[in-house]
Structure formats: structure tokens, C-alpha cells
Image (cartoon, rainbow, N blue to C red; front, side):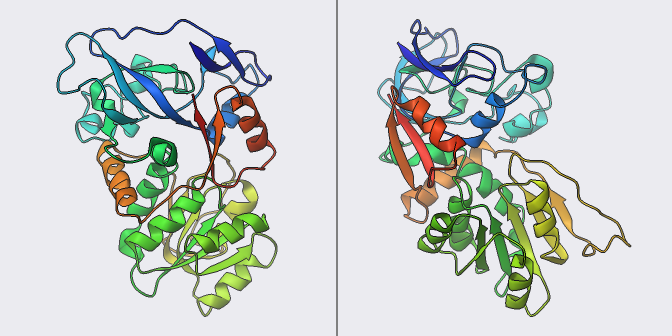
Length: 345
């Protein structure tokens, strides 16, 4: 079968021919119908050899959907031919967090070497993929896999982050989304669907700001010097109730901290890193909660897909064939994608 693999440190991924995998006991094989391209993939492929821990060759793709094609021994309640989405943050299934459906916070994953598809385990950018357990499959039903596969991360991650701030996003509140990329443009729609807050979007790209308006942001501003002042003016100088940062580099961290109000939420969802000056006399707003959520729970993925069924969220997608998948990553690297790229084998 064909697969897109990262094979050499620092080089572009390649489409190669590999053996079609067979499901072992408890496993399910999917005939892949769609796979999403993510900045996380670009991040791990940019790591130097001394920091790369994901194994080579690595079949990419942690957003996946497919048709159940073959069932391993012992698997129950799954039938061949069902259309499924893959829940990506795999865990042990036995710890307290996993028993609560929060496998994204599995306490044993590191100990047991459990890794998500495309981020250690073979991923979805192939004609077939193995899902390690039936519990990591969520029925898609009549949802189009190509239009909705990205919701397994680009929808689930912002949904999980926003749910943690719902108490503060009451009527009259203001929420800021920094970075209107694959996750950010979905976050705007989730905020509009779940809250009465005014939604403000910031980005450096005019096309992405236009997309933000199209999907429901009431205000858009360039993410540059003076943005914090413009946002502050909207709140009569009080600051915003929640900032959702889908970039999380030093510039956006500083920008978010300059906008959030006392007792607000500063939620870091991007793959970047930086430093925040905190403390009573730091000059930062008081009693701010800074969170860095990871992915989302299995039950939340059901909720995200239900939002899609109701028409409340949609992913702006650009579709590529598996043979053209390397060009999708090239466009991602050059910031030429609007929304999410989806690979269709």
C-alpha cells in the first residue's frame, strides 16, 4: 500500500510503498477515507536529531477517518463497513483518567510507550491504518469524512480548551482567538455555538482575518503592535475574559497577557513556547488562570461531531491526494494554507 512517511531527519516526507498491515488481537484495520494535515506534524519534522523521539520511518497523520475493513480477534460491537473517526490520544485504558474518557491525560502512556497514530504509532496518511483498540473509534455516521476528519484534532483541541472556560464566557464577556489557522477558525465557531461572548480574532494574515469574519468573529484585528489597545477599547479598558492562543510564541504570549482582565483565562493551545512574567507585583492582571490543555477526551469528540451534525461548525478544507501529500506539507510550512489540508488516499 501507499503511505506518506517521514524517513530522514530534516527532509521532506515521502510517498512510499509499504506492506499492508494486518490487525492483531483487539485491533481494527481501517481503509482510510481521509487524513488531516497538522502543524504538529511540521513541528516534529523540524526537530533536530537530538530531540526527535518519534521513530523512523514514521507514517504521518494523527487525524484519521476510515471504513472498518478488517477486525482482529476478540473485537466486539464493531462491524466491517462502518464509517469511523479515530480518537487520537491513545492511553492505557486502565488508569483513572482513561476510565473517565480522558485518555489525552493518561498517566501510564509514557511508562508503557503508548503513542498516538502519526506521532509515534503508524498514522492515517496511508491506504490502510491499524487502530490499537475499538474504543479509539467514534462512529461518523452520515458525516462526510473528508469535511470532518480534521475535527478529531482541529475541532477537539479547541473544544476542550474552550469548555474549560465556559463559566467565564457569559453574556457580555469577550473572548479573543489569536491565530486563525486550522484550529483557530474552528475555535471561533465553537465559541459562537457554545457561548454568548463577543468573539475577537487576531492574525497577521489578511486572508485569515477574512476567514475569521466568514465563520463568525464579530471583530478582527491584525496581530501587531497596537492590537492590545484596540481590543482594550472594545472592553472599555477592562480587558477580555478569555484569550485562546493558537500560536503561543513569545510575541503572542505577551499580546495575550496584555489583553486578559483580572480573573480571566489565558489558554495556550499553540505548539510554540515562551515565558510569562507572573506574580502579585509583576504588572500582570491578578488571579488570571493560565492553562495549556492537550487534545481532548473521547466523550468530547462525540460532542464535537454532534456540533458538526447540527451545522454549527465546519472546517474550511483544501483537499490533496496521497500522491500530492508532500505538497500539502510544503504549503503548510510556507503558511499558504487557509483552514485545514486533508489527504484523501
